[in-house]
Length: 133
Picture 1 (spheres, helix red, strand yellow):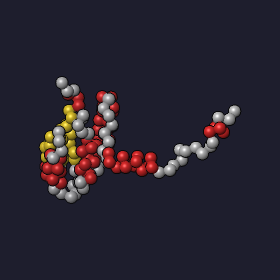
Picture 2 (cartoon, helix red, strand yellow):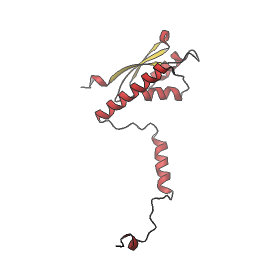
Picture 3 (cartoon, helix red, strand yellow):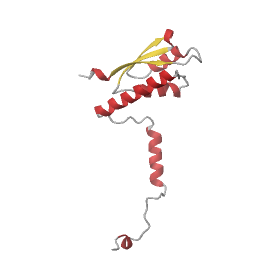
Picture 4 (cartoon, one colour):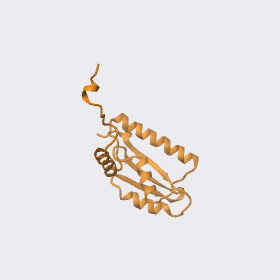
């Protein structure tokens, strides 16, 4: 049985401009697996429900921002988002969940490039001098 504390219901608030973001964003989010979406036109927001083991609010917000949507940037909204991000990250940490890597391919590319690039972790000192006493 799943822990009821991992089921999250949040609202993603959008900026006034450009207008008409709510229906498009709701449609976009509805294509993500394991996310329930409810557009709230009167509040300029989209209600989302998800399991923390599948998604985080930060992940959903970043998805929307990457797609070109403009989230509400009032001080209260920024503080609320920051608090929710922190709480969800802490809850995932406490559950022992592995950290989500959002961009696997680019990180692997950097690791491979680093391994093939000569860098400063090589010691040119001869072995007999390293053990000199």
